[in-house]
Image 1 (cartoon, each protein chain N blue to C red):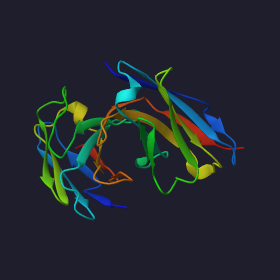
Image 2: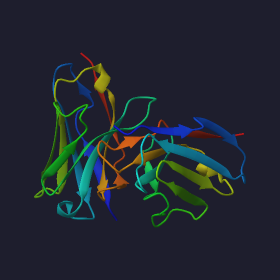
Image 3: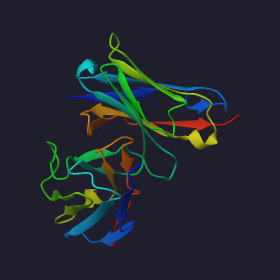
Image 4: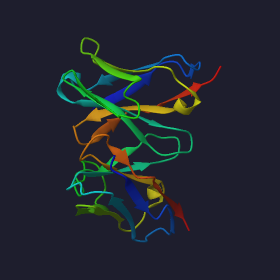
Length: 107
Length: 115
């Protein structure tokens, strides 16, 4: 199985800050990397697909980058609704695997 | 708009079979990929498997116990997990659309394995 490692595991930031979450794959996965946002008690929501594609409805302050083994999710100008847990997921080969999550908290 | 809704028992006894359904609205179930994903309380996400056009792909860690099937007449798909233990206690999500990404998710259902 491909292991996905996110860093940091938790992050404190303020409204208006710019934050970056990293995700590393244990082997190359091309661009097959998704990001999900999950609020407490809610289902995950697709934030970014194929490393950098924003689905319709996702605010443009979210962006994704990377290829191969190293990827990043960047959030520009944090809003109150952005405080949540973020997961990366590789969809290069099954079993599709997730990172352990990054909890973004208000400073 | 695409909506998914899980249904099924919230409590299953150890060694029995967990069975869940996912009703899909807003799109034909015949045309996409449909997945089950679970999340133990306070933990991360685990991909269980998917089905598309009758073909399935399962997580090897669960393959001997899991079956995902589709009922196109009802526009729903299902999960069966046999011989459950406490380790199978989790929120189970159905999700689907693309092969490489789950565009739409159900709200999730907590299944507790306990006698």
